Length: 134
Image 1: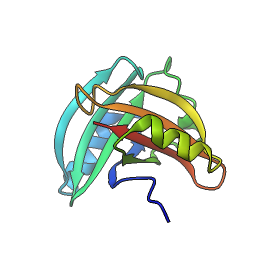
Image 2: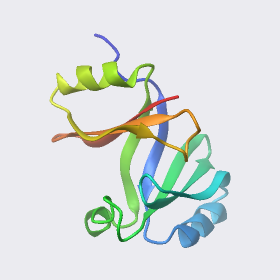
Image 3: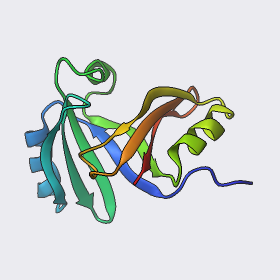
Image 4: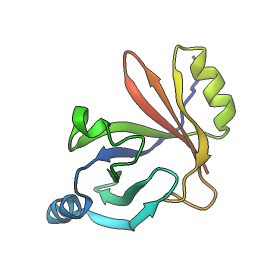
């Protein structure tokens, strides 16, 4: 069977207050690997934290963000898994053939790196995944 997704890049964790969430994660021994920034493409504050080899992306969406409404459903909890891919367009096409729906077209991801491009997809049986090409 063909492997469509690469390794897990990070787990996206939706939070209502990123500063308070960072404090809790640090109290658990996790360390910040990318300081909090404002991502103007997503209208959210984002921070990356290493938790024993697993990277967490803390995301605090602003009220005007397209993802702010997810806080009603998810509150403070993981809501997506991000997978590395070599070619984001090819991965999207192959996943669409497996009943995934593209919910956010490929766009730059300044919180990850200057070169990163991400896209979000949804499957009715597994939820939201993010793809990242660096």
